[in-house]
Image (cartoon, rainbow, N blue to C red):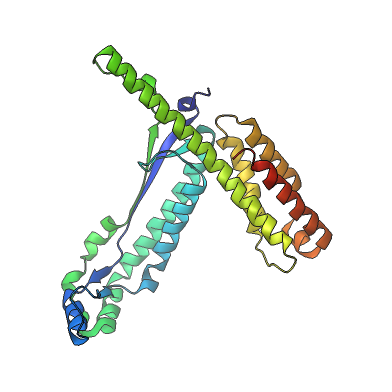
Length: 281
């Protein structure tokens, strides 16, 4: 079996943020009371800062998550995801750029924070409570992105001075969990490919269906990524990926929109590939 511990690592991304939403217990009690409702009938959560002032932070947070999940594979329930060593430099370069952008919009938020609080005071009226707002000096600490990289642990990494038969049992459990995680990662790749091919098949079958360029480009990008992510060198996965690139990625999106015959043929090829994939995943 391929020694994954030499070809990949685990990476975890933590995004720390602040929603600037607050449960107002007094308002909640008043609303429930005024409507003859029970105390737990509803909760009044107020926006301390208008959502529009947080939209850039929210947008880049989302972009970081999407890139991280797109460029890593499922591994364990602990949150760590597998990253091929071949993809490490490209991954970190993009993530660092996104994190830098995140820091810049956070700084812009801090710069305008006082004016956002004044706006909230006007917007919330009697619901405004200045004590609910963090001091401006604490804002930066409430927003951060961190990347943690760890090695893939194998049974050979387990060395504890305990009874030999117990140690062997633990090593066998580690190896079993490791192999199950490998299977999950490969399943993750198959699922991504299948989702992309299925979307193309369904869209192109319907001559009137409108589709974005990403219907094609995302699938082609995934196939290019797979060259780095197929850590177990699964031949079926490689063959399907090559077939997708050859048959589904050869035409530009505009060609598929304008040429009905090409669209029809590509839809059939997508369905044929789907049928073939059903035997592998």
